[in-house]
Amino acid sequence: MKCRVDQPTLLSTLNEASRFVATKALNPSFGGILLETDETHLKIRSTTGQALYEARLLAQIEEPGKVLVPSSLFLSAVKSLVKGEVTLAVESDHLLIQQNTVDFTVAIMSSEDFPDFPDLGSTKEFLLPTENFMAATEKILVAASKDETKPVLTSVLLEMSQPNAMVTSDGFRLYRSNVDLSLDMSENLLLPARLLKEVLQIVKKAGESTIKCFWDTASGQVLFELPEVKVQLSVVSGDFPPYRSIIPENSSFSFVVDREDFMQRLQQVMVLAKELSSIVVFEAKDGQIELSSQSSARGKSQALLSPLSADGEIPRFACNGTYVLDFLGTVDSDSITITGVDPLKPVIFGVPDDASLLYLVMPFKLQE
Image 1: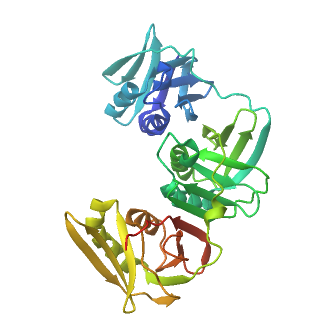
Image 2: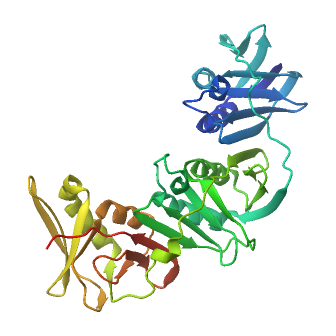
């Protein structure tokens, strides 16, 4: 293999590909970057085992071929070069990376076990509207679990029947966004949240209005295809928790607060709340809402919040302040609604006049 390619373009693609390289893999080849040429392009491929990435770069091909090289070493070498043309050439058992008077030689890895994109057999094809899909996904990712021992909770639920929705939950909170994805299919998809976040960065960079998707139900693979990049993800196996059963059907209290004021007061109280499992207590006092946190060893923090409006008798309740701040960071509304039934039932955070978003936080049981 021998080709010439633009250094900034190569570096940008390698940075993207490196996000799909396995850091801890039983198969050594999953720690590499596969380079393969056709008549006009250099293809760059990487894999985590659960995801497969490929990008096509326009290149001057002198000799076709394929080679697997260590990801971090190859990336570091290309990063050290300057803007301009780079020559990549296979010589014996190494890859030569050459630019002007600079040469790097990188040992070649065995590519025998490196995966290729399979033929998608029982494939269902659909289009996702980029803007709606990205806006909804970027919001709800905050509530996905990072605990790999519970794979289903590390996923994003894509409800493909009408009305479409995207949902995440880590078992302590739940975030749902009702969003029009122009889909009307009976199945739901569970996509790995961490890898889907990387896909969003690629989609944003591509600037396409729609994302072409192929779902092979037999192999459990979903392919996101863009003009010069494609990413295949393994669907998460299992059933998403029946989350609708924990959403209260009615409420006994609700109040509306200014978002910026609420965020500031909550951050102040969280100075001590972090010492106590991030527990923040909400309590109505003389027409205001007191936010407080108390640690027997370190002290107490409290702040008063003036509601813009209130309905019903607001009880004393507590929830994880970090979770609430996570939600506030995903919306840009001027005000926030807080709704509940009683101190032991889930608390709902939302945006006035926007029923598409629902953020539910499980409460802490308070000792009187």
